[in-house]
Amino acid sequence: MTRANKPKVLIAGGGIGGLTAALSLLKRGFPVQVYEQARQLGEVGAGLQLSANTNRVLFALGLRTALEAVVSRPGGKQLRLWDSGESWDYFDLGTVSEQKFGAPYFTIYRPDLMNILASAVEAASPGAIKLGMRIKTVKQAGDGALLEFEDGTSASGDLVVGADGVHSVVRNQLFGDGEPVYSGNMAWRGVMKMDQLPASLKQSASVLWVGPGAHIVTYPIRRNELLNFVGVVEKAEWTSESWSQQGTHEELHEDFAKWHSHVHALIDQIEIPFKWSLRGRKPLQRWSTGRITLLGDACHPTLPFLAQGAAMSIEDGYVLARALDEEPEISAALQAYDGARIERANKIVSKAEENGKRFHNDEMLDPTRARAFVNREWSEDNVSQRYDWLYSYDAERIAL
Picture: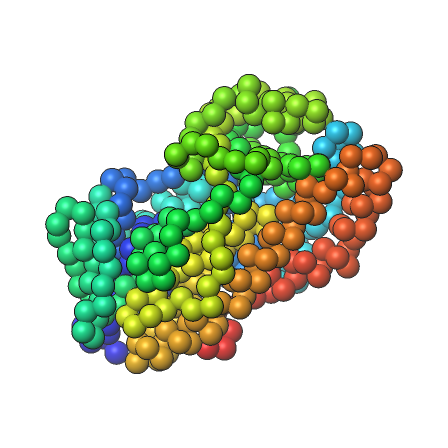
């Protein structure tokens, strides 16, 4: 089928999920238009972990060479206790990932991934991404759907995909469940230059610091030139109107006041610390209605405790394109998409919440109990049980 007689797809949102969906559809010959509210593509600098399930999709889209030019390749995952700094190696991300799951494990600077995806979409269809387009309403329109924008313009197509994030306008108009709810966790994010760190703090591994009521993840990005820092803290409330804002080093030090000296040495090196409200929604049992569907954080925002948020958006975009390509009737394609994705996505939401309780457990207040807790919870069998089903997933081959 040629592009001329394939359904036209309008994508609301030019983030990672929206761009992945656009590229997946364009490679299958669909006409696609992406509408992004920001006036320029890009996000606050932060890192992402791209596990094997994610990289299989990105490689299938022809992005391996571009990725390998900018990613880091952590050799493993290391766990450290919040106060003593005692460490355990618990995951090989190098050859084991390739051998066991068929693809490598990368870490990447989020703006680098955005640039790779946007460049690939523009190369496939120049002008496919329209910026500064803030959605006002989405409507079913006969055999298609309509997007109306705040500037008074509109666009019509055969299908609208709401890829507009946790604050999704499309979701709210489709299902009417209001604004996302603060999860009780806030995240500190920042990056630092690796060559400015003392030798004791330079690292090639992904490191997870666990402690009562909080945890920290650090890993190299951009060819090991930068170190990414994420620190999640349980907070009773979020009082700012903004869900992300610049914070101060002093606040960040205070939130991890009793943590190991290495943590504070890292905090000192962060260029600009940003603080983010981690928000969630109740899981949906249906993502599609008529000629409108959802993907990514618009339908399954998840706490970042499995490092699968971007992965889920990428999988969604690829599987949606597969469904539309393999099933010419749109309603049947969307039913297949929902059926293939909802159970996995909702399971990840719940498993991420479980991991949060594990990372923040009060067992770690006592050194002896802390060691026993870590040895049990991060045993080889338990780690395998928590992660193998995630990484072995193949969006190219799952049944629709």
